[in-house]
Amino acid sequence: MSELYFEYLSDWANNFEAILKNEIREEIQNQNKIKANIVESNQSFDNFLKRNSDMKIAEISKEDFFKNVIWNVKGKNKPEILYFDISNPRFWIVHNISASDEIKERMDKILSSSYLQDSIYLSHRKIEHLQQESGASSLGFRLEFNQLFIDENNSAIRSELKDFEQIGFSMHLWPKRKKSVSFFLEKLNEIECPVNYRSLNFVFEDENSVLVKEDLFQNGSVTIHRGSDFKRHLKFMDQIREKYSIDMHYIEDYRFDWINMKGSLFFIEFDKEIEPPVFIDSINNPKKNDESFKINAFYMYQDNQNYFYSCIDLHTGVKFYLQVNPKGMYINLGKQSCGNIVFRLFTNLQRWFSIKIKLYIDGIQFDI
Image (cartoon, one colour):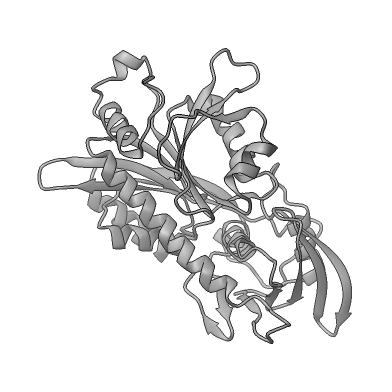
């Protein structure tokens, strides 16, 4: 059996644990870090492969949920190898050990920014909860906030803004002591600096050593720095996927089903007043060179201060509706809509509008 392909997920995990321990790095001549992505898919794995002809399965796995995928990247002499855990058909976990600068952009495009494929979206609160519930400590973080809803000529925000609410910044902090992380976060909150994680470092330990040290990013990707227990990392990935899957099912249970007369609106409450048309223009035309919100909103009509929009989810091509007023945004999802719309809107608005927004479902606040 090739050292690159594995019959069972457990064999692959043992191999990656050896890599993590630096036992076989010289042998495989690969000093790159182990990386993983959790992706949300609205298509079967077979259809995903049909849409990406440069990918094919190495027919060696004896488990239906574990796939060795050969990716023939254009311009590269050797193919990349991706390892898929599709035990949850909606949320896949994909590992690789390729060079980050060579593969990241391609990975993001194919796995999470193409038709029927999306990333997951972790709010700052959800990342903190994952840290608390997993028992991990932290040795650093990256914060990112960039106010995209104001400019010199046409602001989408009516309210007077505080200093940190109208600037863009990124902050990378890697203190030498664990207690320093909580100290800095406490001080940042005191000065009302938006603590919106681009990534948070997770350190899992036993009494004697570091089991694994890794960074979790807002989009559900993970980079491992060092460790000795790859299975602890896999447990963490399963924990993230399971919790996101539970939240997704909860969200999608509230989509409108007109046949059975059930469903409710989702409401994102703003902490500052906005100009709805300018606000939607900012969502339709983000000032970043990416597909951040991945929606197109088309004006329908206005009723007093309520503006109604027919929208297309660019992830699935399915229609949904927005009702926007100066104090918030109602989201109307049909039965065929993808619940990731809610996560994507909420998390990106935290990142580019306000850290203090809240989500309500059927009038009850949901801890997204």
